[in-house]
Image (tube, rainbow, N blue to C red):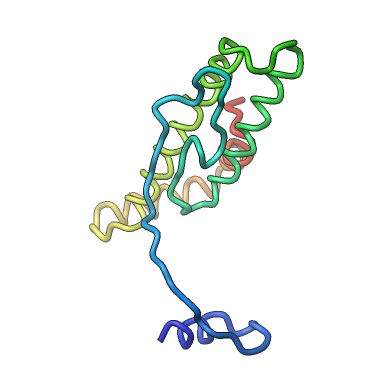
Length: 147
């Protein structure tokens, strides 16, 4: 049944294949209590997982790496605990904001309540017609910058 569903939904696949095994991984929001301890630091999915609704998990990971690189570029001891804590302070708030936004989007788009559908459709129509706001949201989704 799984093979048939794959064939029906992914017609451009070339050649035959065989299903060897299957597994289910629940989509769960998870966030480490701390991003660093001692000389160890967590980045990307090791620090946080997010609903893959808009593909923001990889962007958050890239932003983590960029922030850590920026912080460590000008220091002598890259494992210094205070530098790693600075990275955590820099990224935790941004990651929580994006995680919360994705949770809200998931709730809004997976819910079939008529008032919520109306509000969602109205919001999308307004957002799509306001160039500067739309551009700001897209820039934030890609870069994580609130400028």
